[in-house]
Image (cartoon, rainbow, N blue to C red):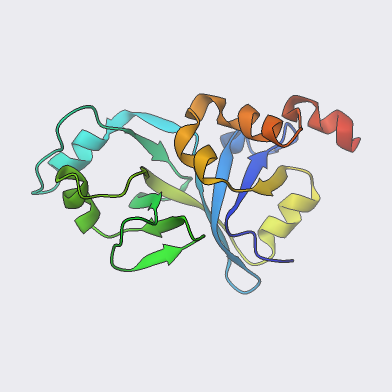
Length: 184
């Protein structure tokens, strides 16, 4: 199977794991030997704020309203990942596409506070991971729909609308997915 890095995984109504119901995952890396790593991009964390993240550092909190934090998945939930536009250059980034990169660089916090950060970004706690061959097995069971990832979809669609809007953009009514594939 070709790499799905830069693609969305959209949970179908047949998703057997309730933790991923109606989730949109952006795949950051995928290969036969290492498996896959992705970030849920449509689940905000209501109890933890970006302000709290800043308070845990020596960096002053930015002025104004701060964006939400997102729950990226059940793996390593204590780690912070920053999915952001490639207009900002950080040390040690994973280039996913020409427009989107993934970083864990702490200096991005200060640069955002100083208004020198990326144009668009999402702070995400934890990630979703699959061992070699595991994602391919889940795809074969119709638990996920794969669609091309799009910059605007990641950063400009409200999280609560993402699951349906992304699929509708591609002409798919996700609520009818089981009927279309014959697995309802």
